[in-house]
Amino acid sequence: MSAPVRSVLMLSQTFHPDIGGAEKQALEISRALAGRGVKVTVLTRQPGGLASEEDLGGVAVKRLPVFGPRAVDSALFMLKSFFWLLRHSGEYDAVHVHLASSPAVGAVLAGKLTGRKTLVKLGGGRGVDEITRSEHSLLGRLKLAFFRLARPELLVMNDDVFNWLKNSREFSGLRLRRFRNGVDTGRYTPLLYNEKINAKTALGFENSTLFLFVGRLSPEKRLKEFLEAWAEIFSEDSPAPKIRLVIVGGGPEEAALRKAVADLGVAGSVTLAGSREDLLPYYRAADVFVLPSISEGLSNSMLEAMACGVAVMASRVGGARDAIAHGVSGSLFDPLNRVELKACLRAFVADRSLALKMGEQARKTAVERYSMARVADELMAIYSENGN
Image (cartoon, rainbow, N blue to C red; front, side, top):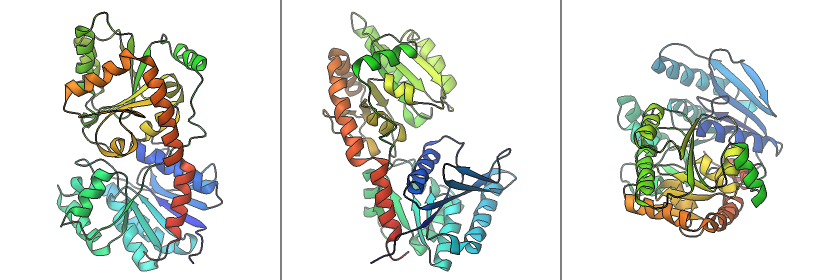
């Protein structure tokens, strides 16, 4: 029988206070494990102005100084983290690498030399995943060649990527484990009907059906195309539907989306709220969470919305296809089929109770399959398994 793990080293090139999905998931998993009495240390880069060491609710964060252009910065962090893992190998039982970027190479090599179990979490949906991106550069291809030789255990967040890698002749030798992100279902909770009305009012919205997107404003999210479909609904339906769309987040597409809102004449029904540190008020005010991506891993924001009892309207790709039962906990559509997309929108417009019923099922799914408590327990068992 394997001995229980008492200490875990989390390796992440970026970490809190960065607020991306991978960084947020790394922090939440670390806190959940620390709550179970595991000693958790996070090893990450030291951006300017941040302390070299910090305690975040029982999670010890150690930041390694780096400098120079991006390529130099990444190479330095890979080398520094590699030697840190060798020097401190007696201080941890397992290494959990968040994302298969260059530091994963150093961590896997250190694991082979020290005998410490090393896991690497893959990020991104099919086509924008780290394996695909790595194939486009020489260094990336060298990294993949090393992975095929070293055969680290890779945690894969959705069936699309898992099945592709498993059935690919080139990558069939990789050690894959199907896993998932988790959500704190104790913090992200549903509201009663009157409380939801108050939550909408607190954000300045009337009691109409509120659609919500939370995430990075990047091309693969297809938000511009979603706005075009949204505008068509308003031009085609009479009377105009009583719905509102709120987009929370920042990114390279923000300026283009603001222009699209103005050009399409939907400023009266669409709000671009920018980046927000506290997302809970938006989840609690929302009726339907929107995820129109062409490719997706497993969205933290979607899981948080589900835990808050929000129905999901998402592209039939990646983690959404795995998590959402169409017609039960949400609606799924082909991201390239505008007719399907608009049919999903119109279904929620025609029957406001639909979002409520689907939201209840979404909450149930979040609790039963994606709760951080369950994810942490399963990770503890994985860490304790023999072999590397």
